[in-house]
Image (tube, rainbow, N blue to C red; front, side, top):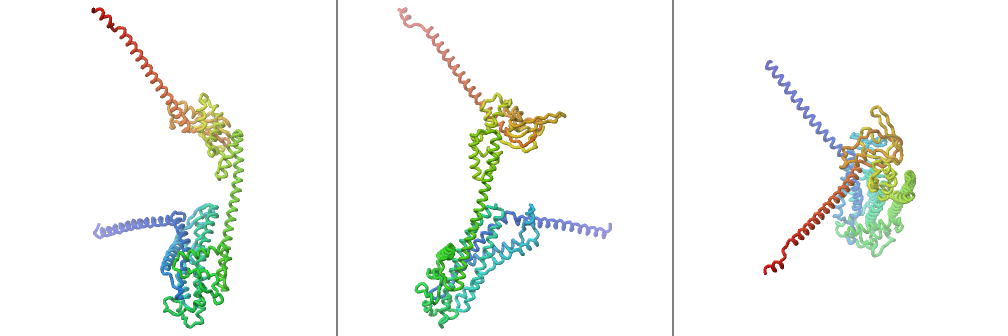
Amino acid sequence: MSYRGHHLHAQDNLMRDQDIEGQVSNSTDGDDSGRKRTRIKTLLDPQGRLLQMWNIMFAVSCVIAVSMDPLFFYLPIVNRDKKCVWLDKRLKIIAYSLRSVTDLIYLSNIILQFICPYIDEVSLKLGRTMVVNDPRQIAKRYFFSRYFVIDVLAILPLPQVLFPIIFSEMRYSKKFDKRKSLNGVFFFQYIPRVLRIYISWMNLTRTASKLTRIVWVKAAFNFFLYIFSSHVLGAFWYFLSIQRETACWHTACKNHTRCTSTSFNCNHPLSDLAFLNDYCQPIEKPNATFFDFGIFLGALQSGNLESTDFPQKLAYCFWWGLRNLSSFGQNLQTSSYFWENFFSISVSILALLLFLYFIGNVQTYRQLATERSEEIIQNMKVKEREIDLWIDRNKLPSSMKKEIMPNVQRMLEEKKDIDVHTLLSHLPCELGRKIKRYICLPMLNKVPQLQGESDQVLQLICDNLKPVKYDQHSYIVREGEPLDAMLFITQGIIWNFTTNNGERSTKCIEKGNFYGEELLEWGLDCAALPNLSNLPISLKTAKTHTKVEAFALMANDLRTIVSRRIGAVSAVKAAFRRFNEKSLQLVDQGKKKIEMSSELRVADHNKPHVSGNLFHSY
């Protein structure tokens, strides 16, 4: 190959290597971006834990937001000595800060609504769950919904913008009529913010049961509306009281040249406004003929308008709102001022609406409670009829029936679901044991392997039986499978058949008989504890012909019974062994005593007589 050809070949290899590296890097970037998208989808899963936590936090923030907004109404404070209005700077910083934080949370929720996937409602109606991830569909769905309009109206910074304007209108003597319309706009924003709370709580309770969603949430929401409305009305009453007092100042200043456009600004040089005490001093001498303060007279006479004690003002104004809501505004003594009457009418209408909403919730609750009671009563009748038939089928005596039915009625009244086939598990232990022994002991006495057993063993087997149920034409055990239960049939028919080696053998097992006695041979004929790994193999297939009810002795329960039996036998053998050992010890001790006594007699007989020896020595 020439140098030129070799050089071109090297360039081709280099370009190929660069392409491969580029593909690898592109694939790696694609994998990373795919992982990021998957992670984002997981975080924004509409049924995920993160969004559920966010919904809870947002609902709580909405409640805090509407509760903090009335703080703006408490900002102005009256200085009666200087006849001016000033702002509580500390409360202003708190109000503006809290409003800014809650607005940021509202804005974050709006952004989430534009990017968060949602579950298609049409798929839910069809019984499927389809998550829509298309950004265009998500944004279009939210932008053209009513929720977007509510969220935008709720986040508008109306208090931050309008309050300085209203405050300046209160201090200056010109164009103060503008504040009437501004007050309406200021108060209007509470409608979308309260609606946002209702929507948030309804979204949170969407997965709850119908009864919980209707009763508890609406009751809590109704109580919150009462408290919140009292709080807002009290704050607005305080705010309007200051406006009425400044309106009196403006009215009195119309005929006096000593008033200027900045007369009621606390930063204005001192001017002689003592003449205002003759017209606008409701504490000492209210002059209703010149200026009637109406429902705002109490706020002026209480001294709260000039107080800097915020908790005192808050409690007093809240009590005013709660008292007038509870009485539907009947105690309000209004003047002829139009906007004052409009405010009083609004209080009465709001109180009436809250009361009607409360009555509606009570009626809904009573209706649901009545339907629930009727459902419980109907369910009790059905269950009692089923249990009564079960008692008759099993031929239980009337004494047992009298014990069963009160327990059943008590559990049904406690809203416990009772199944006839699991009735014994709901009854007291002693009563359930008595019923099982009454039904099953006659069948146990028919079993050949149990003919020589004591009543104590048979009762122990009865106590370990478990109620079972099989549907029609269902297999209990197939030929060649391990046999792990013995059945004592109380209702229905079982076919027991085999087709092994071309031989057909069929047996019909009916009520009052048993099936699976090979399990007893496995458990009772063993000298040692039976092994569950060595269960007997079923030589025939057992299949239900009808619905079957039975009591089953499971292999593990039989093993437990045998272990107790072996333990009892071992204890008896150990006691007998100890008795034999003790008896042998007593016999040995007796033999030793006899031998010792015989040896003593022999020794006494061979012993020399001392007196005789002495006599012969002399």
